[in-house]
Image (cartoon, rainbow, N blue to C red; front, top):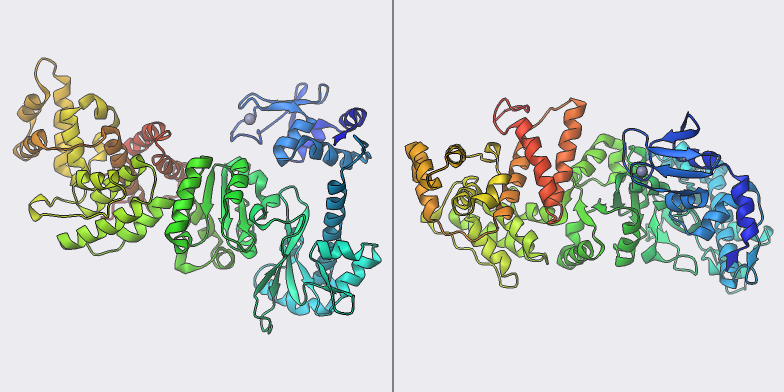
Length: 596
Ligand SMILES: [Zn+2]
């Protein structure tokens, strides 16, 4: 099925590309062009040019460009035919279709969507003005979901009566079989259409192009109905595993931010929007599926889970890792204070919602943190036990490099030689068993730092470019690093001997140990590990930062921190993070407060 060529040209001739673009982008006239901030890539100065005479757009930043149909396709994520139909609708042009007009499926789909549109409007009107919806209005007002919010999200109310909606839709000449097919009505034993939803607050569910295809209905408090939410069952136009509630409102921001937030409920999505975070979607009463991820991938590469992903357990974790690899997305997890959900927080503490997204952790990091964070680590046995638990979680991850990075981090945090855990990370399927002998005990931070010093002696060129003084938190390691750095400037002699000459007794002792230490780890992974630990350390010490540039830089650092987990992005992320660390230092007076 295609649209007649002359109709396409008629549509092109009757819409103004500047008008169309201006619905999405603020444009100002500059010479013969209209210029604005590109909607397809993040930028601070306008590279996005639109020219009315040629009816084309072009971005000199990301090279996006094309005609008005291409623009609608790209910004709305729709196919060519849909883009033409949308613009034809705006221009009031009726399209003729070649090859015998619209297919039967398409005609049927239009009828079903039409019935849903009528139902959305009717339920919505009912909520806004019907006397029997007073209780629903009161309830929504208490939760901050009235007025503009109700209008924006087209919230509705399904009355208690058994056939008011069906009767209304029949009066619009919508046949019974359409009402049944779309799940709005069922036929009762007396062959009369009966409303499927009764006495519920209605959340219409739209496709990403804005067509209503289903409803989620919530009971009012005090209702005797045991099902808090009732969702439309699957129909010819509604597929649960392929539908994300809120994508129609979120997609522009999702694309712009290259990030999508996945919630559990409709009110969570609305809560994010109310708090100014407009890139949230929700699954419709199902777990996140591979189909969902495939759809999300079309819009963004960073997926933040805004629900308790850990509760889903190991099976879910393995699926997430598989999808990360298969679809090249990064999955992270947001944590909310006091176990509150985003819908609640939007009322009590909207700023906390945005902060939770900024601070979302990579999925594996989140799980490791649950194991390591807050556990007492007094005895070697404590440390071995926590390390074992952490390694079990880490070894669920399929990528050996990722496992080793996290193993290094756990080793540093728990105070166990990096090489020991790194070995366990390599042999993924064995049950991890960590032995800590008291003679090998070392300080927590010193450990990864000691390995780095050892590697400097063994493979200077591989690791030295990635190290700076500020990465070393232990005073002795730092002095050892500085001694080696100074020694490397002296040509003629061997590095170890020169450094030993420059060193004080304490450093000499450390260097002598390092010179004979037996470590087998990838130098880069140790460097990235140290950088990650140092960034977290600096961030944790930077409280009360109010300067806007500093906040932005810190946020950037958190994003880079995630990129450190990705072996392709890690080198570039490391360079940026090293600059960030160097600017702030890790010691007192380095820009943050130094309460410890
Ligand atoms: Zn661009």
